[in-house]
Amino acid sequence: MFFEWMAEPSAWAGLFTLVLLEIVLGIDNLIFIAILVDKLPPRQRDRARVVGLSLALLMRLLLLSVMSWLVTLTEPWLTIGPFDLSQRDLILIVGGLFLLLKGTVELHERVEGKMAHASGTRMHAGFGVIVLQIVVLDAIFSLDSVITAVGMVDHLSIMMIAVTVAIGLMLLASKPLTRFVNAHPTVVILCLGFLLTIGFTLVIEGFGFAVPKGYLYAAISFSVLIETLNQLARRNMRRHAASRPLRERTAEGVLRMLGMGSAVSSPQMETSSAGAADTAQVFEDEERYMVSGVLTLADRSIRSVMTPRTEVVWLNLNDSPQALRERVLASTHSFFPVCRGSLDEVVGIGRAKDIVADLIEHGTIRLSHLREPVIVHESIGMLRLMETLKQSRCQVVLVTDEFGAIDGLVTPIDVFEAIAGEFPDEDEVPDIEELEEGRWRVDGAADLLHLELLLKADGLVDEEAGYTTLAGFMLARFGHLPEVGDRCMLQHENMIFEFTVEKMEGRRIASVLIERRQVDAQDIVESENE
Image (cartoon, rainbow, N blue to C red):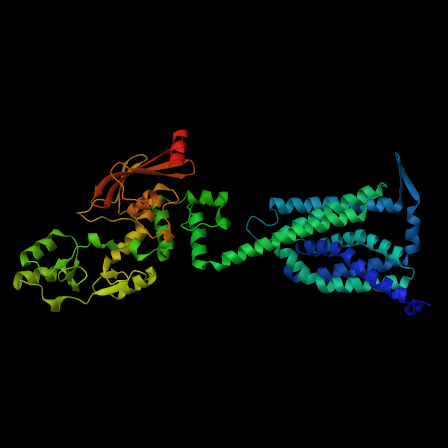
């Protein structure tokens, strides 16, 4: 009887083993069907998968039904030189050549990036063409599965049940497998490599050279293991990148599109495409500096934009009216901190014209005309500082340290200069002065970020170091208070930047000469000595 084997335990063991083998042998067919249906519009892909696997089932059942005919295909049918080829050999050779051709074409398209129109719209193949290719692939892979079934069990019903169960399980797994393959382009390339390997194996088997399946499966298993490790590494890199603030990652991406480095580098962002470099040439330096200033503004500390305590112009109520009036008239500022004895004893913020009017009419500064001082801690973020400036009527915000001492003050123009660069007053000299090509005179209080952008050199800005000025950078490099003529060097790619102390004012580095030149052997020796 057709199902008389059901009473035999060995037959059931053969059935389960054959189902497992049929699934293993059908995985490659399933993967290549997933690659083929990806060429169809999304609405047709599910139907193509079902049609493809259904055709695979019908073809395998048909081949099982005529397995007696398959056995006779091993007789010599054609002689080519020293090779006596049977019909089965010709089927293997033709099928192998088809796989080699198909794998090469697919691999070329994906490596060369010819999968889309110039307009950016995805190119889709016809439904009939894809189904026809699936049928041919089914015919090739079905032959292997059927021969395995014939060699393992003796009952035709066991073979048909095993093939049907395997195809049913593959049909359930086809959609998630297709999504996985489409989401990982490197997996597609790996599968196409398997296709070429299998095609080559079929060709040489057709010519009578036996290839142990263990070698093939070992190579495929090793490749799958390496790809699995690669996918895990990519997932961990994405997880690490996702742990960083989205604003920071977006800023880095935009800066690199503009052809500039970022203040915070990461291994994932070390390389940039040639297209991005070409795009950067469209932007002028000033435009790139402004974009960089906007994107990095939120990450900057208040100390990097404020006017330091030593440069704050303030009025002492203990001074004479004449001295106060001369100090106001000699300054270009519109607002002044009014203090009693020292800057830390601030009474209020006065407008220049109101102060002058009070001094002329009343001989003193009337406290009723002063505005309440707005004081923030130095740890406040730039975004909160900007909001405070918007709400401040006096246009001046004082900054204190953790001990309550005044560190400096911030005005809207300071924030604007952090974005667009320095706008010196009439009585001020620019912080960065270009003397000639490759030589600059820079004030020690110059902002490191803008200096780094101007020099086009990384390595000056270090948010964790606690300094924001050129003087702070040089003090950190020297490790002690330098003298006039002391120098230090910074290498960036093939350029050397030499920083020489030009002028000292007490314990402050007042002026620095910067020279840029190509790296030479002498620079390397000096760098090693340092």
